[in-house]
Image (cartoon, rainbow, N blue to C red; front, side, top):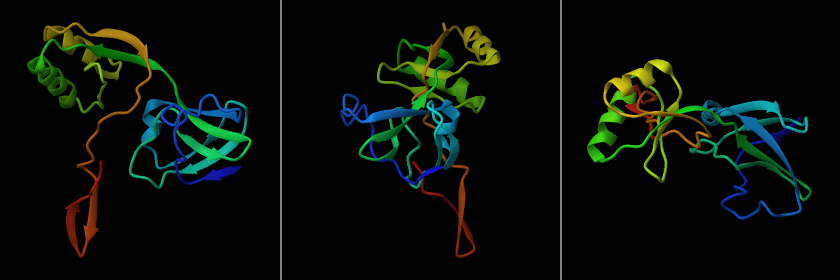
Length: 164
């Protein structure tokens, strides 16, 4: 088993996708990207154990293991998603409130689309509220979930943990 403990870079943002180094992908569901310890098999059958020591969750293209001849890279699998395109800031707030009330992680991309994993009750709620959600197969790159429910004990006092 290959062991790794931190992200070595990202093939997409670092411009490494054209290198001649062999690439092997560890395919993950979107909800697995926030796990701190991951053990799995790559597409080519290599077993890897990864402990994320960083503050950030994993991105598509993150390099988990690297040698001169091999890189093991994260590939986030696409899943059915609800995609809503708000018309203005008020719609953005109302849509996020509806999703937040159901405690569902949400992703907002650069095009200001609101993306959440598909759930039929949420679909119906958004349609009843007058929005036009679309069901699309997408990669949820990263959810913007707040970590306010993680607590740390320091000197017998409970304080909010410093997160994202």
